[in-house]
Length: 91
Image (tube, rainbow, N blue to C red; front, side, top):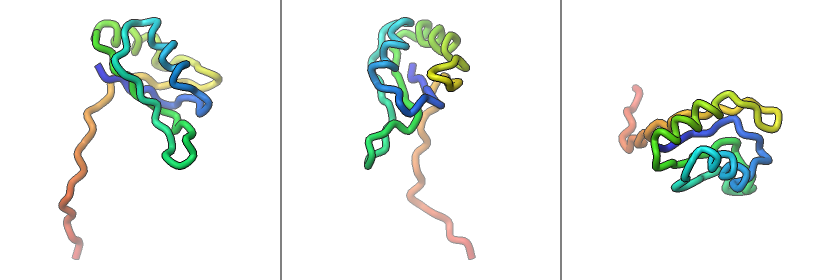
């Protein structure tokens, strides 16, 4: 299951995020989103966990929990919508 983690502290590292989720089970991949110019975290990321029951447990345990003074948001990630290559013109 792909999990979205939002409202993370900007000082959060990938290793800290990994440790937080390893408590609940195996992690396939982790992606902390960073600004491409500064390299600083944008405050959100994604984790893929192969076991759905472990992922559900992690979501229930961590959603709305406090982390470094911020209430984080943890839920199942939604599928990314494809960008339309066709734009309607307004007249």
